[in-house]
Image 1: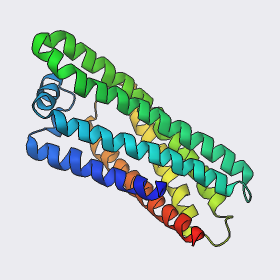
Image 2 (image 1 turned 120 degrees about the vertical axis):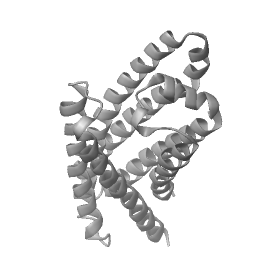
Image 3 (image 1 turned 135 degrees about the vertical axis):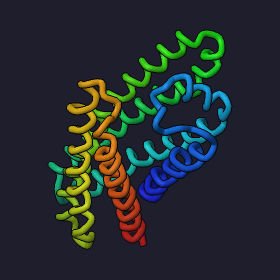
Length: 226
């Protein structure tokens, strides 16, 4: 079930963040603007809490799936199982920390922004920077972990070979995302610029790969129980 729960996480997040929030007035192009973002979440507190709950639940489910998958692979590929499980769980944990920092900013700072906009804006930028760097390294560790688990899955009797190939492909996309985010964005301070389009494409590709990975893997676990 962990895989299937994790598989619903990113589609729900996209629906809430890029769909419902945009309809309610959040301008994605101004997401680095504290006045715009904190004003929006002040007016829609339930929406950010729901999105945070979806993210935290999905990340915990993804971590549990990585643990269960590593345990299943231990008999056929102990090296890849140990390495992949450790890297994936570490990566998901870093992303969970980043999401917690973001959620703290989105939930805790709007009220402060009404009293002291300058202090709230500084805290917002600080938490965003800390969350972004933490999430960046999380991308890399998750990518490497999924790649290692994918390689191990190719040795699993009765499991689709395509599932292992998907893991290896997802690892490649995740490593590219790390390169864009860390080398070309984080170090330069460029919030996106001309790289925003390519990064968004990579995010969509990785999100699709991770969603299918969890759904397909979760189905294999359910079949194995029958």
